[in-house]
Length: 231
Image (cartoon, rainbow, N blue to C red):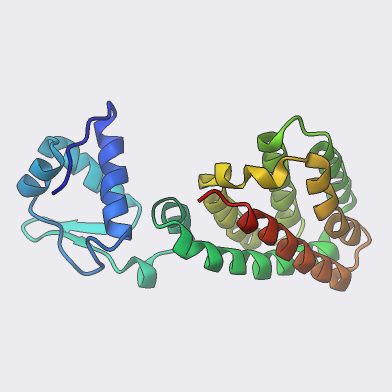
């Protein structure tokens, strides 16, 4: 039996609940949600709140509503894009982590190598400065944000904006569950040491060395992040 929602922000809470129910498979792709009156009663919300929540789920690409037909769960794995990854990481969690990290390794190494071939002097200087900022970060959350900025600048240094969008999608996914990985940044100097070889090879304009350094970096950080994940 579905328990009623008691949080103050009813629509936000309902979106979270419905999204979780869709992504967990309670309402599988292709299935119809229960009629609005029945669904609203099950979650103890008004039909107005439910309509607002369904609009937001539709905007996220999870459902589609047709007047006189009902609300159907989309085949989001076949039709969805990277914008769904943050929702999946937050709601579906562990089963997506391995796949996300695999793409992070492969795309990240490719992007870093492209950046080594195309980065300008200002971008190289910016990356070097960010590694210094990372080393001097006040705490784990600050270090984590700075490292994300390093990855954004690496992507921007490729000269290809699509790489930037791909990296942003992965970072946005990661940041949805960032608290789980704070332990990997408990010592900002160690975090800086991990990524420094990538930035150094990139600044030396050596794509092959950068690619290898990036693969090693992503493998090491993944081991640290997954090894210490809160359960």
